[in-house]
Length: 283
Ligand SMILES: [Zn+2]
Image (cartoon, rainbow, N blue to C red; front, side, top):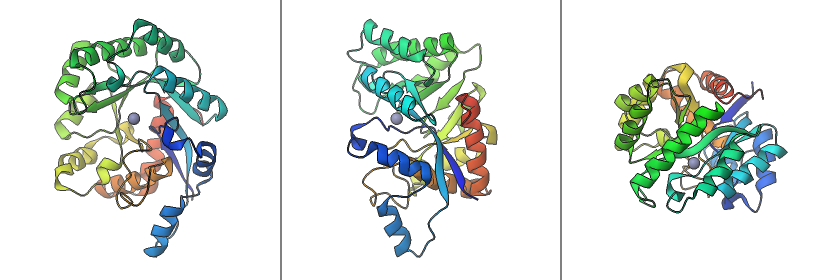
């Protein structure tokens, strides 16, 4: 049985894919793994997986990138865009920029508002500015009745503070590349969020142990898989692939199956169902 993957976070619009974007998208769609992966599998006498990408979400990080994501969604009906200004790009954001995001948010090709959120790792924008625009994106998602795609890097306490103040009704959305422990997972799940797992959950260093524990406990119906392509190449391909791509969600699904003591087929099926429901997609 062919595994039909739903990658809920793939930045097809980024420069990393400028030279071969359309051929890569077609290749994902039919399930042709990149040569680097085929070489790796052959070297380890492992069979080529029977998997393809059935659907994907391309989240914008700026007005320009959100527009590109929308244009890709126009070309490929199985890809949907998300529109937002990423927290790292909020330092110079103007009301006019946000007005453009609001217009993109209304389109049929736009399935979600994201990625928005908070990031203290790069410190590219003052945290008060990030919080301001994060709140504006949360309100926008409420107005257009679309789910949120939330980025959170080294800012979980601030993120939870903002969300607690906004609570009162359950949220619709996902915490993308979830990288916290079981306690944070529990609170975000109680707020209504799905949790999206990336290559991070496949990494073998001990510091990821709280994340593995969280991944064991998320209920089936709130679980999503994603790549964050071109970033976060999963283990054991990390360092062997020059960029990540949506077929690699298979490796995330395999790791979740191992942690949750179930089959990869089960993980792929439930995560695709969840994503279709969350993003209102029929593909
Ligand atoms: Zn991203």
